[in-house]
Length: 231
Image (cartoon, rainbow, N blue to C red; front, top):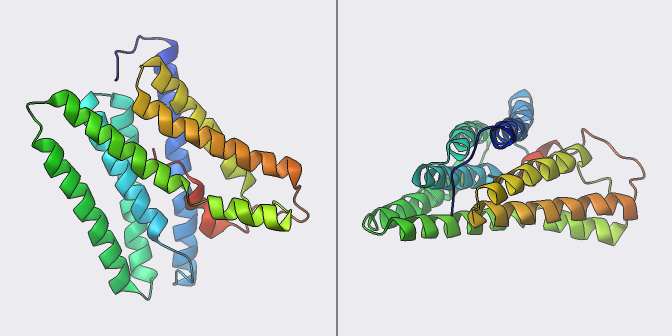
């Protein structure tokens, strides 16, 4: 589980990891700006926003239980941002009833896990262990979103549909948190970010195998948040 960090390189790494992750979370602001400009969410999905809120909320809970200040800080910011993105999507979507049901389901899951883990006050290690497992499951499920894009790239043998800058950033962010998890001996931080590194490397490898024929950095606005690591 988590350990005590020593001053110096460790603290610098945790600080840069928090900063880079927050910048990654802010990619959602680009999407919301398009919603506001168009006064519509179009055919884009708001599920990634809801999943991001759920993931950050669970990791915030985990950070509080393990007393990891970096995890607490980044996920306070993350859960707040994703909640704002969720509200913006709600304002501009035409299918508000379905979106409310999706968000209500996420809240029910979040509250249910918190209530259950709170019943384990006499077993703090078990409480942390179960919360960590839930965090990993939610994060791994979130990673499944870009897989459909990867299959499409392989089929058409062209990587122009993938957002290269964000994928590179995702790799950098995941690598920082992976190293952080190794330094504090926390497997629940290591596992999802190791998978994040692998997924990012796989996507970067597709740029080498299937170079984009006419790549546009701005063409993937609605897909940005789906590539973000929700840690």
